[in-house]
Image (cartoon, rainbow, N blue to C red; front, top):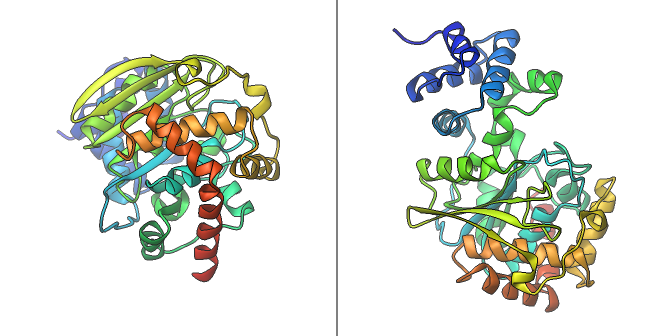
Length: 342
């Protein structure tokens, strides 16, 4: 007998797993809008309370991918997503968005999948728009942008139309649910490589194993011990790495890379405009914590993309991309492409 939503809910109450095929069915019902808002809310809250398993997350991500509007990239070599789960509450400027321009200038192809603000004062889509970027390109235009510019920005709501069935429930609940974890696992361009920041130390091992099951090639999942969903300058960073099918977990520190420890306070912003100003400062090669944190995260993205041989090698490539003006030029090229596509 196929599982019913009520039976699935009972499982979560009893802290028992919903198995793969059962989770596929339940998730398809949610995405199709077949469940009432009450049942959807109960299920996703129940999963959160019992803690989602790797199997449940993997099955749910497969369904979200099924329902997504995809971007077809002809050559996925060196294609990487730089993404955070959000929800870290750090209110920093858009580090991963800035790292996207730096990594692209250093030879990666970036397929960034992002939305408006979750926990920050400024989501990646907010700041891309503030910079003059076009977040509403068609899938074909995004694929061309990746090929020609080395950057494609995919505004999540445009690629996950079925999420409209869940959006009001998530908004009213106002707490983290499985969907905060799923977004970074469902890149519409099927980027085989990923640098993913997560909001809790437990998620490092969970997300890297979900990515393994979902067929990722090279994944670097990070959690700053000061609570950041990025590689941090303020504390050690936990890393879960998937490479050639093998998972390794380790810790890195700013001083390993010759960087100065710095608190997140210097990176905080209140508005997309402030985030944009800080991002432009980094691309203008202004020294300081903002530039350093972008360099280390862009470096990890270049390593994940298999452009760099290590995070340290990636950091040096990122430094050159910023100091030479190549990263700033990449931003201008990205904005020009988006405007010409209108």
